[in-house]
Figure 1 (cartoon, rainbow, N blue to C red):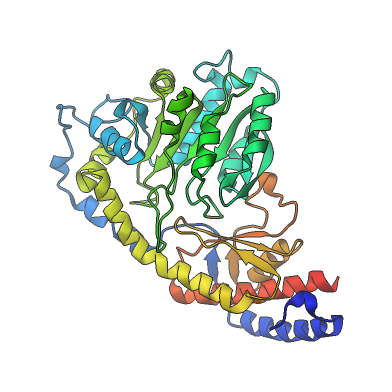
Figure 2: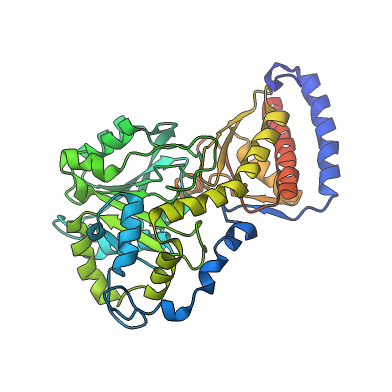
Length: 425
């Protein structure tokens, strides 16, 4: 098929008529497919079932004799802190164990900063007037939803294959004390799958914020989620910060949501000792601590950080064919048409597709009418508004291979139709 933009108006109308017939035939198949969220499939969840088969009487006491069924250990059991400190490349004293959701920890960190302030800050964020957050785009919709709920103004920062535009980040952070933070998914970012370069991580560490209470929200959700033929390497931001004495600037978040069970995993918070001590004082009023039985259950199952990495290779074996299938279908149906481009991640949970400006909402609408639900167009941007209306997030993991093929075949058909509608005016 020729490049769409080289077609005459007559050729476009003829092609659109043909595609419309194909679309009506696809609608008649009665699809009910959901690719709207990046969730593990049943086979991935099954990989961790043996963790639940452990003898419960082996999950009572920590090595120092603490009964995990009782109160205590606000920051989490030492064994869990050690396990995830090793995985994240920090010390045990830099770790606080949370519940099952890192998103909950992020939400809580924002709420605490607004109400109670952060370490080194003169007063709580909520007492300082209008606040701003930097948002690399396309990005994670749930990050943006937190800012929107709390009334924090969001500023979009372009994201490339090496990370956010750091010149622009530096300009905002170092000149405006109202800028309190930035959202980052530094490895296999949601949805593009990009990993920040060593230069980008160093530039983050070297920032000199105008605000005394600025924080980098380093959501390292996909640290061990490699599935490509090669894996991306991410520099440890705390190692980078040591050169500049800026460790207090970083809040790192991690979870096992896509490692064990999304609804019953572990969330992890990593930060400088100053931040950890400051936050534990606040937490001590809020809670007596999170699920220590689950912490010990994970530790005894994985034993070491290498145990987690070995487990993730099993996930990769299940995920890899799905990404290969999606990319193969996109390549086959859309290459050379001049109507879009897509990322080829080595890990993570998404493929990011950019069509012609003005096509994303229409494509998602056409797919929905034919029974395939995608993430809402614009979801990867603050306030749900993609200024060019071109980006769509594709989530391959939850569907079966057959469902994926059906969904992407329909997606490509709808992309062609949406592109022709724009080109024909």
